[in-house]
Image 1 (cartoon, rainbow, N blue to C red):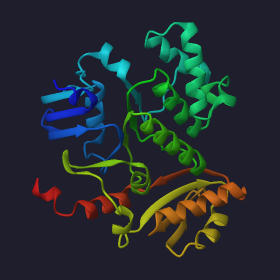
Image 2: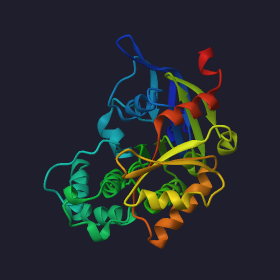
Image 3: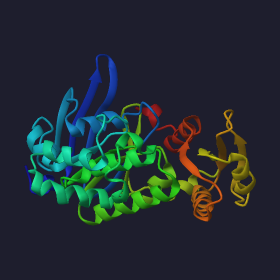
Image 4: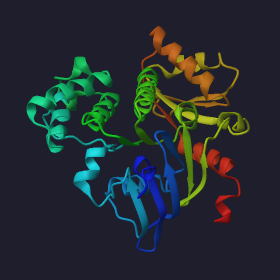
Length: 317
């Protein structure tokens, strides 16, 4: 294996089938350091690709190398890889500090060396003040960040992040994206799965667009937001006063629609300019008028956006 490939994530002719169901097919990738985002609708193959990188599943055919290590070499692989799953499950009774330290024990760190690494990881995700609180009492966004601390604590070279921004409020999103950029500048590979095209376009060095198990586009994708003018993005904001938020979102000309969720604890907003809308939302949160609990895209609208970006390419596979 060449020195160059030992510094990259390599997929050579990789396919994964679940019985007769296609996961991914004929994937050839060479991923350099930096932030690479996996983009595609549900069922496109993003999770399969990440599970292949972590060794959670094996390819039906083809070869995978993670910085010169095969995914079927778990002891070597997990010294290099940090994985942050989107699934929210924790052992009962642990504090945030205990949770992160326990992961370092799994990686073979002794208690004396694990303690400073634990504090460093918790500090990087902004949870120092909550480190000795029980994880069960954390908000959804705090639980997402402590999972990220688990993934970075052993100082991996590769970070695999499955929807890492889900559940974060706008301020925490911005802080987490800054952390991703810092890690990339330190030379790490970050593989990020996301539904939020605006954030992908903002933070990524490279984008891999998947559809129906195939890689249909890869590389630098500029101006994705500009291409979406005819396809407004719909976003659901969970907050304590959605009616008040509705009265303010039209400060942005790009907002074309706002309607209350049926449970009256959220607001659907359609916007043609996600950047401007998120800046407005950040300002509202900063001013303290409205407590925003979470911000998430609405799948049906995003699927339409993906179809628009993919065009007929997916039909050609």
